[in-house]
Length: 173
Ligand code: K1U
Ligand code: ZN
Image (tube, rainbow, N blue to C red):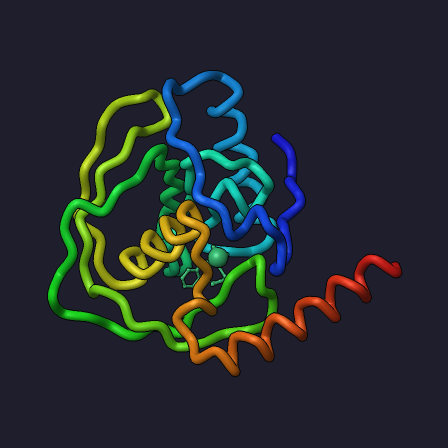
């Protein structure tokens, strides 16, 4: 398995809608495995394919938090929200493409999601808590949307300016 480079905002690939997967190939299975390894290495609780420059509808996540709890690595191809709760919850979100910036985002507290698993089998599951926040954040990535798009323009612009500066500094190293 390999650790992939994570794109940093602003990058045009993070603003584009990704194409659906038409069949689960060994290349896509390796991409899912590499994305999981990249996510654990970061560390993070989720990662979407466009964050590693792959414009395809694939996300990975593992929101198991407890010490001693078994990890639950998940790879979701073509994930879609098929039901959202009226009840919302607010969670302080971060993003591996916007390092060191966090903000409260309000989203449906529970969502039911349909996807194809690593073997191409259809799956459905209701997510709540951090899992619900994370799966919505990752599906947003597939539609070219970042958590800062939920913030007021001034705060979004301030974060974007800081990211431009960070990218310039990293490029100089
Ligand atoms: O999509 C991403 O950039 C990954 C992101 C997912 C996410 C975090 C918080 C709310 C919604 C979605 C991250 O994983 S940021 C890092 C992070 O949250 C974390 C890192 C280490 C331990 C626990 C959490
Ligand atoms: Zn993100």
